[in-house]
Length: 210
Image 1 (cartoon, helix red, strand yellow):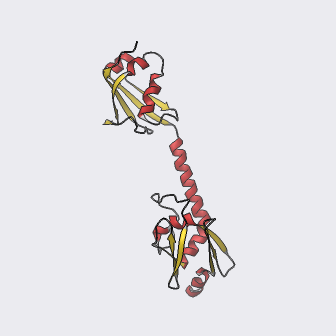
Image 2: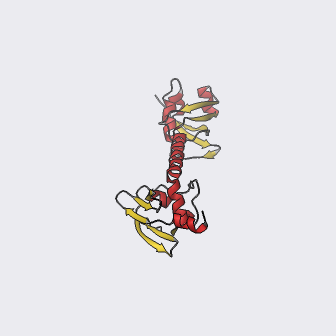
Image 3: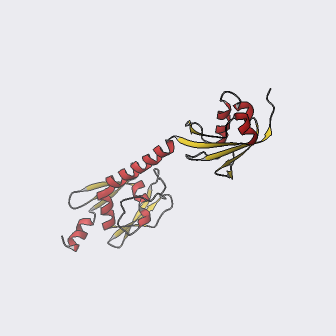
Protein backbone atom coordinates (compact mmCIF):
# COMPACT_ATOMS: atom_id res chain seq x y z
CA UNK A 1 0.00 0.00 0.00
CA UNK A 2 1.40 3.41 -0.96
CA UNK A 3 1.71 6.21 1.60
CA UNK A 4 -1.23 8.01 -0.04
CA UNK A 5 -3.39 4.86 0.11
CA UNK A 6 -2.40 4.37 3.72
CA UNK A 7 -3.37 7.94 4.60
CA UNK A 8 -6.73 7.44 2.86
CA UNK A 9 -7.37 4.26 4.86
CA UNK A 10 -6.55 6.07 8.11
CA UNK A 11 -8.88 9.01 7.42
CA UNK A 12 -12.29 8.46 9.05
CA UNK A 13 -15.43 8.70 6.96
CA UNK A 14 -17.51 9.42 10.04
CA UNK A 15 -17.05 10.53 13.65
CA UNK A 16 -20.04 10.40 15.98
CA UNK A 17 -20.12 11.55 19.60
CA UNK A 18 -22.15 9.47 22.08
CA UNK A 19 -22.14 11.64 25.22
CA UNK A 20 -24.53 9.54 27.28
CA UNK A 21 -22.63 6.29 26.63
CA UNK A 22 -19.28 8.14 26.73
CA UNK A 23 -17.70 6.83 23.57
CA UNK A 24 -16.60 8.15 20.19
CA UNK A 25 -17.78 6.12 17.20
CA UNK A 26 -15.26 6.26 14.35
CA UNK A 27 -16.04 4.77 10.92
CA UNK A 28 -13.78 4.08 7.93
CA UNK A 29 -14.18 3.50 4.21
CA UNK A 30 -13.23 -0.15 4.69
CA UNK A 31 -16.50 -0.64 6.56
CA UNK A 32 -14.74 -0.83 9.91
CA UNK A 33 -16.34 0.95 12.85
CA UNK A 34 -14.84 1.40 16.32
CA UNK A 35 -16.12 2.66 19.66
CA UNK A 36 -13.45 4.53 21.61
CA UNK A 37 -14.29 5.23 25.28
CA UNK A 38 -13.81 8.86 26.34
CA UNK A 39 -11.64 7.69 29.25
CA UNK A 40 -9.40 5.81 26.81
CA UNK A 41 -9.01 8.90 24.60
CA UNK A 42 -8.29 11.06 27.64
CA UNK A 43 -5.80 8.60 29.12
CA UNK A 44 -3.70 8.65 25.94
CA UNK A 45 -4.04 12.38 25.35
CA UNK A 46 -0.62 13.14 26.81
CA UNK A 47 0.98 11.58 23.74
CA UNK A 48 -0.46 14.25 21.44
CA UNK A 49 0.47 14.01 17.76
CA UNK A 50 2.23 10.70 18.27
CA UNK A 51 1.08 7.17 17.66
CA UNK A 52 -0.15 5.68 20.89
CA UNK A 53 2.19 3.51 22.93
CA UNK A 54 1.12 0.07 24.01
CA UNK A 55 1.10 1.01 27.68
CA UNK A 56 -0.55 3.80 29.63
CA UNK A 57 1.70 5.73 31.99
CA UNK A 58 1.17 4.92 35.65
CA UNK A 59 0.89 8.68 36.21
CA UNK A 60 -2.32 8.88 34.19
CA UNK A 61 -5.30 9.20 36.56
CA UNK A 62 -8.49 7.21 36.12
CA UNK A 63 -11.23 9.38 34.66
CA UNK A 64 -14.33 7.18 34.31
CA UNK A 65 -16.68 10.19 34.35
CA UNK A 66 -14.80 12.35 31.85
CA UNK A 67 -16.84 13.70 28.94
CA UNK A 68 -16.02 15.41 25.65
CA UNK A 69 -17.10 19.02 25.39
CA UNK A 70 -16.25 19.58 21.74
CA UNK A 71 -14.27 18.26 18.77
CA UNK A 72 -12.49 20.72 16.48
CA UNK A 73 -10.84 19.98 13.12
CA UNK A 74 -7.09 20.63 12.86
CA UNK A 75 -6.40 21.24 9.18
CA UNK A 76 -7.20 18.17 7.12
CA UNK A 77 -5.06 15.75 9.11
CA UNK A 78 -6.30 15.68 12.72
CA UNK A 79 -8.89 16.62 15.32
CA UNK A 80 -8.59 18.41 18.66
CA UNK A 81 -10.66 16.91 21.47
CA UNK A 82 -11.75 19.18 24.33
CA UNK A 83 -12.56 17.33 27.56
CA UNK A 84 -14.81 18.62 30.31
CA UNK A 85 -12.03 18.30 32.91
CA UNK A 86 -10.36 21.28 31.23
CA UNK A 87 -7.86 19.34 29.12
CA UNK A 88 -7.78 20.96 25.65
CA UNK A 89 -4.36 20.13 24.15
CA UNK A 90 -5.02 16.62 22.89
CA UNK A 91 -4.38 16.50 19.13
CA UNK A 92 -5.28 13.23 17.39
CA UNK A 93 -3.89 12.81 13.88
CA UNK A 94 -5.76 10.41 11.59
CA UNK A 95 -2.88 7.93 11.84
CA UNK A 96 -2.90 8.09 15.63
CA UNK A 97 -6.67 7.82 15.90
CA UNK A 98 -6.69 4.79 13.59
CA UNK A 99 -3.91 3.16 15.59
CA UNK A 100 -5.93 3.68 18.77
CA UNK A 101 -9.04 2.28 17.10
CA UNK A 102 -7.21 -0.88 16.04
CA UNK A 103 -5.72 -1.41 19.50
CA UNK A 104 -8.42 -0.17 21.87
CA UNK A 105 -9.28 -3.66 23.10
CA UNK A 106 -5.65 -4.61 23.69
CA UNK A 107 -4.71 -1.29 25.29
CA UNK A 108 -7.70 -1.10 27.59
CA UNK A 109 -7.41 -4.76 28.55
CA UNK A 110 -3.77 -4.15 29.53
CA UNK A 111 -4.84 -1.14 31.61
CA UNK A 112 -7.51 -3.16 33.41
CA UNK A 113 -5.13 -6.04 34.10
CA UNK A 114 -2.53 -3.63 35.50
CA UNK A 115 -5.13 -2.04 37.77
CA UNK A 116 -6.25 -5.50 38.95
CA UNK A 117 -2.68 -6.53 39.70
CA UNK A 118 -2.09 -3.34 41.69
CA UNK A 119 -5.30 -3.95 43.65
CA UNK A 120 -4.30 -7.54 44.39
CA UNK A 121 -0.87 -6.37 45.48
CA UNK A 122 -2.43 -3.99 48.00
CA UNK A 123 -4.64 -6.80 49.30
CA UNK A 124 -1.71 -9.22 49.77
CA UNK A 125 -0.79 -10.23 53.29
CA UNK A 126 1.70 -7.91 54.99
CA UNK A 127 4.51 -9.37 57.04
CA UNK A 128 6.26 -7.05 59.50
CA UNK A 129 9.02 -7.28 62.09
CA UNK A 130 8.37 -5.95 65.59
CA UNK A 131 11.24 -4.94 67.88
CA UNK A 132 10.74 -4.53 71.64
CA UNK A 133 13.23 -2.60 73.77
CA UNK A 134 14.14 -2.03 77.42
CA UNK A 135 11.32 -2.57 79.93
CA UNK A 136 8.95 -3.69 77.21
CA UNK A 137 11.25 -6.51 76.12
CA UNK A 138 11.71 -7.53 79.74
CA UNK A 139 8.00 -7.63 80.47
CA UNK A 140 7.15 -9.58 77.35
CA UNK A 141 10.17 -11.83 77.46
CA UNK A 142 10.58 -11.06 73.79
CA UNK A 143 12.97 -8.82 71.88
CA UNK A 144 11.61 -9.28 68.35
CA UNK A 145 9.13 -11.23 66.26
CA UNK A 146 7.91 -11.45 62.68
CA UNK A 147 4.15 -11.53 62.23
CA UNK A 148 1.60 -11.49 59.43
CA UNK A 149 -1.06 -8.83 59.86
CA UNK A 150 -4.77 -9.34 59.45
CA UNK A 151 -6.31 -7.29 56.64
CA UNK A 152 -8.11 -4.97 59.07
CA UNK A 153 -4.83 -3.83 60.69
CA UNK A 154 -4.07 -0.83 58.48
CA UNK A 155 -2.30 1.69 60.71
CA UNK A 156 -0.14 1.94 63.83
CA UNK A 157 -3.31 2.97 65.66
CA UNK A 158 -4.85 -0.39 64.68
CA UNK A 159 -1.74 -2.37 65.58
CA UNK A 160 -1.35 -1.45 69.25
CA UNK A 161 -4.90 -2.38 70.40
CA UNK A 162 -4.60 -5.60 68.41
CA UNK A 163 -1.33 -6.51 70.16
CA UNK A 164 -2.97 -5.76 73.52
CA UNK A 165 -5.62 -8.44 72.88
CA UNK A 166 -2.94 -11.12 73.16
CA UNK A 167 -2.95 -13.24 76.28
CA UNK A 168 -0.54 -12.82 79.13
CA UNK A 169 1.23 -9.54 79.81
CA UNK A 170 0.48 -7.79 76.51
CA UNK A 171 -2.31 -5.47 77.67
CA UNK A 172 -0.41 -4.49 80.82
CA UNK A 173 2.95 -4.14 79.04
CA UNK A 174 1.67 -1.92 76.22
CA UNK A 175 -0.45 0.31 78.44
CA UNK A 176 1.27 3.66 78.69
CA UNK A 177 3.15 6.02 76.42
CA UNK A 178 5.00 4.32 73.60
CA UNK A 179 7.73 5.64 71.35
CA UNK A 180 7.21 4.06 67.95
CA UNK A 181 9.49 4.10 64.92
CA UNK A 182 9.25 2.47 61.50
CA UNK A 183 12.62 1.79 59.90
CA UNK A 184 14.11 3.98 62.67
CA UNK A 185 11.93 6.95 61.79
CA UNK A 186 9.25 8.35 64.09
CA UNK A 187 5.71 7.91 62.81
CA UNK A 188 2.20 9.00 63.70
CA UNK A 189 -0.58 6.72 64.87
CA UNK A 190 -2.43 7.23 61.57
CA UNK A 191 0.52 6.13 59.42
CA UNK A 192 -0.10 3.10 57.22
CA UNK A 193 1.70 -0.17 57.85
CA UNK A 194 3.31 -1.67 54.74
CA UNK A 195 4.66 -5.08 53.91
CA UNK A 196 8.23 -5.48 55.17
CA UNK A 197 8.06 -2.68 57.75
CA UNK A 198 10.33 -2.92 60.80
CA UNK A 199 8.48 -1.39 63.73
CA UNK A 200 10.23 -0.67 67.01
CA UNK A 201 8.34 -0.10 70.27
CA UNK A 202 9.78 1.51 73.41
CA UNK A 203 7.75 2.06 76.58
CA UNK A 204 8.43 5.65 77.68
CA UNK A 205 5.94 6.01 80.52
CA UNK A 206 3.98 3.24 82.22
CA UNK A 207 0.29 3.29 83.07
CA UNK A 208 -1.00 1.35 86.02
CA UNK A 209 -3.71 -1.16 85.18
CA UNK A 210 -5.60 -2.71 88.12
